[in-house]
Image 1 (spheres, rainbow, N blue to C red):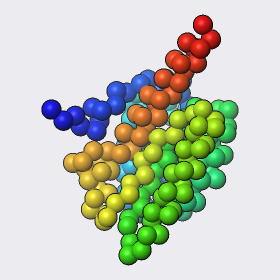
Image 2 (spheres, one colour):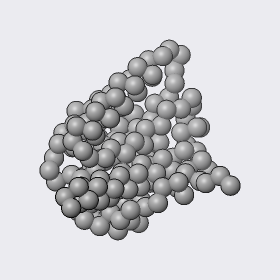
Image 3 (cartoon, rainbow, N blue to C red):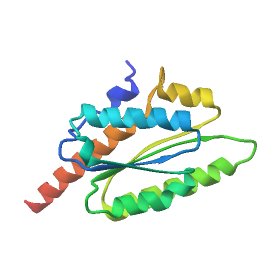
Image 4 (cartoon, rainbow, N blue to C red):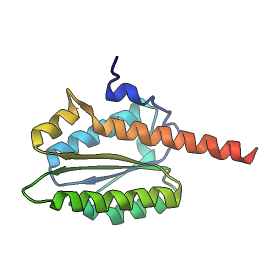
Amino acid sequence: MRRSQDEAISTASAKGVRCGIVTADYHPEICQRLLKGALSAFDQAGGLAQDMLVVSSSGIFDLSPLVAEMIERSDIDAVVVIGCVVRGETRHDRFIVDAAFAQFTQLAVTHGKPIGLAVLTVECLTQAKVRSGGNKGDAGAFAMKAALRTHAELKRLRQVKQL
């Protein structure tokens, strides 16, 4: 039996977790749907509005400095990145996504904090719609749940290390 995207990640508690969301403004309808899903998942996991910080920029590549600033903050435990990249006639989309994802990965490892990715890389906006709360799942909620679970696991590993 195939598990749905939402079933693939059990939700960790968001109580006491301070989370940042960095969202692109490009393809605003899709990004707003992803943001709604991420915020809803945070709320459903017991997160409080005062523990959430949301900032935005133009596109995926432009988010890198905001993600870097967010993850370096001592008052942020996890970050979720939201965006949508639609493939065009050239390979430009791959270069942008690859560079941004490499930066996000490096930041997560360097700072020991999770970065959940709700960045859709699709062929068309129809594909994006079904992955942002449509019948193919909600990548925004999935990314938030992944960030919360990773945060909980990192916390547990750090406690075990101190024993």
